[in-house]
Structures are given as structure tokens and as C-alpha cells.
Image (tube, rainbow, N blue to C red; front, side):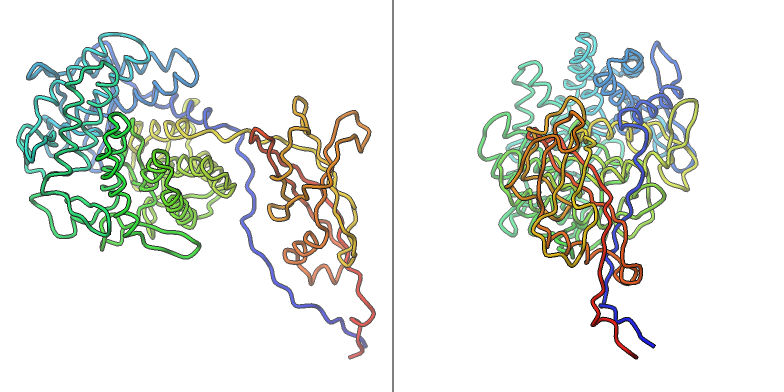
Amino acid sequence: MISLIVLSTFLIFTRQAKPEPDETPLEVAEKAAAYVINQALAENGGYRWEHWDWEGNMFYKTVIHEGAAGIGAFLLSLYEKTENPTYLEYAEGAAQWIISKAVPERGGYKWAYQNRHNPSGWWLAQQHRGVSGIGEFLLKMYRVTANSTYLEYAKGAAQWLAAMAYYEYGGCFIPMNPPNKFGTQAAFGINPAAESFTVLFLLRMYQETGNSTYLTYVEGTAEWLISGIYIKAENGGYKWLYNYPYHTSSDWNMPYHDSRIACFFYEAYKETKNETYLEYANGALQWIISVAEHVEGNGCKWDHRIGDNAYGVTHLVDVNWPTDFTTIADALLFGYSVTFNSTYLEYAKRFANWVISQGVEDGNGIKFPATESTNQYSGFVNAKVYRFLLEMYGKTDNSTYLDYAKESFDWIVSNATTVDGGYKWRTIDYYPHFPTWLAGGAAGIGYYLISAPMPPPELSATIDVNPATLNLRSKGKWITAYIELPEGYDVNDVNVSTILLNGTVPAEIHPTDIGDEDSDGILDLMVKFDRSEVISYILANVNLTKLFEERFMNITLTITGCLNDDVPFQGSDTVKIIMPIPRWYLLPQ
């Protein structure tokens, strides 16, 4: 009786590839728009949408976050992508309804924000729930349509905000609920991040009109942030206090909010070239980096408020349109784009690595929680993650980010509910409504899908690998592959240095050749791979026990690469592998 001694084996477990959805992100966004448009209600010559809160109260809102301005912003962006006049019609309808709700005051206009705490409405300045964001939307409407009515009302919003400015510490800020410093209709603490984003609308008004008065409020807010009692130097950088005077000591330690201040200072620096603004923008990022928590896998994360153990992948419903700031890494990427400081990009990559680690396979994709260790999953959070990972792919060319972005998109599609030719999503499982709005609803999902940088189209290459039967004990030098591209593409344009076999083994730069190996009239590129490296990779990733038992196995080898203009290609071929068993492996028992 004889037995077979089998070499010790190990398995590499990887995520199984999911089928690609049939639809593109733009097509999914258009289906989101179809649902949103279907929910529009006509009033005052325009359109409004219902907003239901968590307790079942319904209001018609004007604002960016959960109102007509946000929905209009999405439809306007979709019109710019497609030139479909229906989207412009409904964006203009949103703007018309908003204009009909304007309340004149102090030479400008304000809009009420209703909720269950104040059904008659708050008078708020904020970007996401107040006059600043409405002004941003009307300004964008003017830029797209050249309709001067929109500019008139944008100027009105700017005039009201300017009239609400509160002066202190040599500068000024626009309170959340003006004109009183700590709120007029209720007690509101000072939030430097929100106040800095409020005034960015005035910066854009200056850029549009050239009226330097708008710029003085931006500079005044910068001075207020620098000279007031709300700033503290620490760890070689700067941090700011929140919720003053109702704050606790922990309100000094809020990295997410400070990253928004960094964005404000970078925006101000880009416009004015004032080096002081650059100093404080970099200082904010320096402090944020100093409090990063490092995790396995070369990742890092940030607590929303240090000590709360609330590590956000992205904010569940937060929207900062048109700034489009959703994570701390967005501020790091902004800082990198301005300064080219590689440390900022490195920490953005580490955050992206941590975000990826939070993904959970589910059905035909991967879902991401809003916050670590929670079960709050939604298409909106996935859409924000999708866009962030595509931004990271664009900055780094790391295909892992692209892969996870695609799987995030797959999950969005697979969790959509089809209705009247459109798509709708639940924000959270226990929320009974299918929201339309920008912050958490179909408009937000669609917006983040179309605002993401589009990955380059991946070409489907035809691959022929030789030898077709590979002896894993052979001592040959090369594995040869022939690559054909689709019609309209030239193999002379392939960047050989980008070619990988199964994402691991690089092609040799030399030798290469261009010919027609299969005599089909289509040129192919011949590249070679080190045979020993390929065999080592195969041995590390197949079931050796099964291979020894069956003596051969069919495997798929995938070759990827890019053209000189960074367009990626991919193709696969199946080869047979064999593992001859030497006589000395067969031993008598």
C-alpha cells in the first residue's frame, strides 16, 4: 500500500468579482431624476417637494439640504451633463417656487426654514439649511441660463446676509440665526465651520460680479477666525472651538469641523493670494493629521469629536453643495491640490484604506456604513463613498479604489426600488419614506453619482497566453502573452510598464514585439512575463491538494494595463496547469 505525501498548502481568500450592472452611473442618476420629477407638486408657477421628518411631520422646504434648492441643484447638474430640457424645466420650476417664497428684509431677501420645532420657520444663514445655500443655487441658475432674475435674487440673498454680519475681534461673521450673535429665535452656539462656509457664497458672488464689497465679508470672516477667542494653537497647527458659549472642553476637538475651516482658508487664499490664509489652512490640516488614529492596513480614521468613538466613513446626510465636502479626506485632497504637500495625499490614502476596510459584501456589491460599527447603510452613503474612492483613484491610479468604487455602485443599483421608470431608495431601513431630497434622498444619490470623476472606459482586450499548457516544474524563462485591442485602438499605444498578470506579475519591458501572431489581420502586442514569478504566483493561489490529486487544472490568467493616455484595458485567457509528481513523492506506507 502506498500513500501520497502532499506539500503543505495555504489558500488566499479574495472577494469574488461581481457582475457589472447593466447601467452607467449617469443612467442611474437619470432614473433617480425620473422619480424626483414624478414627486414634484406645482405651486406659484414652479415646483415644490414634500419633506417628511423622522416623526412623520411634513413640510415644503426651500433649502439645499432637504428642499427645492437641493433638488433643483441636482436637476441643473443633470441638465449640464445631458442637455435634456426636462431637467432644466424642473430646475427652473424649483427656482421659481423658491423665489415665490422670498421675504424682503434689509434691502435683500430671506427664506424661512420650517421644522417641527418651529413650523412657522427659522431665519437661518447657513449654507445647507439657510439663505447662503439658496443664494448659491440661484447663482448657479443664473450662470447656466443667463436669466437675470436669478442673479437679482442671488444678490438679494447676499444683501440680507451682509446686513446680518456681526462684528468682533477685528473681523466679522454671519450668525447661524441672525442678527443676534447667539441666535435670535432660539439659543444657537457659534460654529466657526458653519460660519466660514456661509460666507463662501459671498466669495462666489464676488467672483461673479466683481463687487469687492462681497470680498470684504470673506476677509472679515478670515480675520475673525484668526483673531477671535475661538482658535487655539496645538500640535504645530490650529483648532477651533464649537458651540460657544454652550460648549464643553471636548468641543475644542472636532477634526471634521476644522477640516471645513481649512477648506475655507484655501478658497480664500486661492482668490486673494494672502499667505496668512494659506498658513491657517495648512495649520488646520496639521492639527487634524496630528490627531489621526492609525489602524491596521496602513489606514487611519478620525473621531467626529475626540472621545466620542464616532468614526465617520462619511456623514449620513450632510451636504455642503456646491463645495461638495463630505469627508476629512476631501480637505486633505484640496490641500494637496493647492500645496502639493504629499503628506496630505498620504493621509487621504490612509483614510481611503480605512474606508475600504469598513465595506461589507452584500448581494451584488459592497455597502458602507455612515459610521464605524453601525448598521446604518444607505444608497446615499454609498454614493458619497463611490465619489470619494473615484477621486482617490484619480489621484493615485490605485486600482483597488476603482474596484471598491464599482462595487459600491453595484450595491446602490441592486438596492434601488423601481417605480414608474425611475429609481427610489430608503435612506435608512426603519425610515418609512423614499426621500427625494439632496441630503439622503434620490436627488443626493444621483448628484454624487454624476459629480464623481468618471473612470476611464476599460477596453476589452483579446489575450492569448503561451504556453497553453504550463508545467509548474518547468525551468523555462518566459510566459508569453499576445494582446489585441478593439477596433479603433492601436497596440502601439500600450504602455508596457503598466501591464500586470493577475494584478501581480509585471510584464518585462524587453523583449516586446508587434505582429499578427494569430493571422487574423489585427495587430497584436507580444509581451513576456518571468516564468518563475508566474509559477510562484500560481502555486500561492491554487488548491495544491486538488492539483496534486488531479495532476492538472484549468485556471484563468488576466492581463491588465493602460494605454499611454491612461485608458485601461483588460483581458483573460484560460490555460491548463500540470504538476508532475516525482517518483520519490510516492512512498510505501
